[in-house]
Length: 318
Image (cartoon, rainbow, N blue to C red):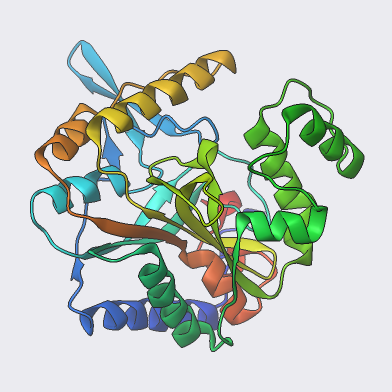
């Protein structure tokens, strides 16, 4: 018998609608403009840890590859460069990843950018939103260095690769080999540290190798770090924020480096988004931005065990 019914009970969908309305109210009260951007585009992020879903668009005998967007970031930065001011978006995003308890191929993303905000100010605003939705206590903040020193007794910015590999193999069942420093740190964070974190916490000042689209700056120890943060809640990554990179040459270099890593791993090479580069060249205001997994927030709000409980039709019913 075909299971045609929704994966989420009606009361959860009603709570979801109320929460989305409260998010919009939160930003309306702060005069942040709601925007919409394409979810299907000719370019996509070349991040080695993110796989996009492609779609072939045909026009007569010609065809062109397009991609369902993993984030609205590139389009929103083009809006910022055009003078939009602070903006936010509630949108669908898509990632080709394993389906599971907290993953769905199609998911709802809240992303916003605050002009002239520091990373610390953005963390505070995100904390206000999360407290409004979940009613949680004030959220502690730890640097990436602090969290690794506390739980694994290492400095993640300075540890030699050989020592890091040895530690990872002692703490985690690793089948693969020839992993990068970033690979080992991410595995240790996910498997050895995240289970020990408080109910909610921010982690900030990541290693510079994990800068992605964030700026670099020296920390209090005169070590260059990535000005970014992540918010964790009950064992899940809930949000990822950056003090945004505005240098077009540096952005191009990072895209090229990411494509080089993709080539090494046998992944598809993605064309650089020249429109984004041109927007950065024209000038983007100093800003901080963050992406929040709305479905995961809703899981915590409703005490849901599986992401399909908070979306109308989970991946196996689409």
